[in-house]
Amino acid sequence: MIILKRYVLRELLGPTLLGLLFFTFLLFITQIFKLTDILLSDGVNPVLVGNFALCLLPSLLSFTIPCSILVGVLISFGRLATDNEILAMRTSGVHLITIFKPIIHVGFFVSVLMLILNYAALPSLTLKSNDYIYQIEFQLFNTLKPGRFYEDLGSDNAEITFYFGEREEKTGDLKHIHMKIVASEEQLTGEKKKDKKPPTETLLIAERGKISVDKDTRTIRFHFFNGSLHPIEKDDPTQNNVIFFKELVRNINPSLSRMKGGVYQKKNKEMTVPELVANVELNRHKSPKTANESRVALWQRFSNPLACLAFVLIGMPLAVYIRPSGKSSGFAISFALLFVYYVLMKWGSSLGKVNHPMTPLAVFSPNLVLGCLGGMLIYFQTLK
Image: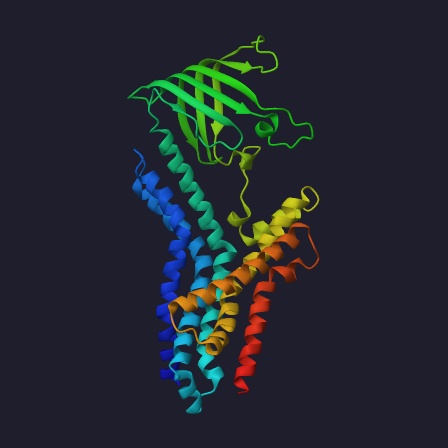
């Protein structure tokens, strides 16, 4: 029996690794283009980009591992069924459950391992990858060349056009700075208001400035000296109020909308399980929408890893019954099952957004539906 188990596991290994490579590359390809653009930029440390890619990879694997296991099960058991090897095993007195058992153990083990990683490790790595993004952005800001207009600085709370005339070689200070800021009051304050006012334009002119990074608040800080602010009134262009300043600080960051009171607001995928629980309790009455989103993320943190076990349960009997003849057939069936899983997962998320009482059951429904269906198929096949 040990030889049989090893043989079945060896058959599973090849197609699973093939599926892992395919799905990981599929999800990673968009990031590859971004990383290539960053690497081609002057002044960016390739080691920093490599660390970012390494931190990003585990979060991708949390999605691609269940998919690859599904493909591996369908292709390996499809081949065993097509070559009548499963029939030969059963004819020799080997029970079908004995053939399935080592693969079920693999699915269970991988699900438990991913549950452990989802508890705190993967959120921490996701947060760490964002830290690397901020460091890369800071390096990119330091490579800005004088005499050019920059319009894509990436701030969420404003549209910014930036220009400076020259840069001092010794200190790195910028000179002859012009910055146009277009933002509404809602974008600047982060508070939603019923009476939305049109965006206002402000022109900033400064003799000198510095760029620095604040790792605690994850912001890129512009420090201006000896300048003036010129608000542009569209309704009355003749009115020109000028504000002079000796020193002014302006923070810019792609996620500035996630800054409140100088504190970085984590996304749900960056929170550990205890932090998600605390966030649900904190926003239960203050912001029900935020609480509902965190609650769905909390349930999905336990539901998604169980996909490995559900895919194993549905994949084995389905492969024996359908007998996919090649890798293309295995991938086609896996895409169909993944589509069903995705639809059920989105249904659970939609119920969670309105805080429906059936949300926990709906979030776990992809695993329950595919797992129970696979269990029924295994039961009926063992009766033959």
